[in-house]
Image (cartoon, rainbow, N blue to C red; front, side):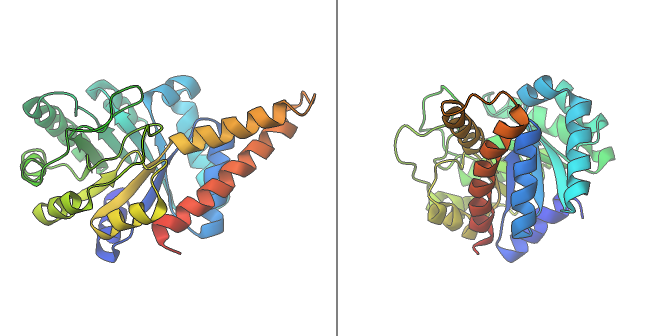
Length: 272
């Protein structure tokens, strides 16, 4: 099964796959342990900053080997690819899915850039995701710029993209006020196009709200901020209570906390 087939299957069953970012060996292992415990597939996400930190080849080899070691169904996805050049590097490195994010550009530029990536990815047979509308990134003002059903339909028709991240009220990073997803708008977008719909910025959104989004067309739920936050908060707490210098004894406790978080998140998308 490839990522395109995975997302199509989720559409048919009105379910979703949890797409998790990883940043080091510990967060990667946490994803795998939680996925194994809940018998869930894993869609491992890497951003440019994580690729720069770990190295592209190292990150891919580590991810592939860990998928094999844990015996789970797993794929590697480029999250928020900000340039065609980065997408090309990831395609050549064997990624199963790539995202080109030109959402901050004018509609026509977003269409042109996304269409180019769709054409580049075609020989590889990989899933291509894009973003339409304004989903606030870290440090940006939240709110506004929601995706419209009309633009979503036109965008998909003009680009041939496989998956589309939509703006319906979510944001990347921490929320300054309680998040509220526009489920009615999502349902309208879902009715306007049969493309696989993606929810970015799920960290901090109540589980029942995410499940409502899944019931109305979301098939891929991205999770990143809570993974980093859980690991670092627990690591800091541990370091204030110990003089231990062996990171091999300290890091696992923070990893365990991320596993607990992810088990609940996998159950959320599976509605267990």
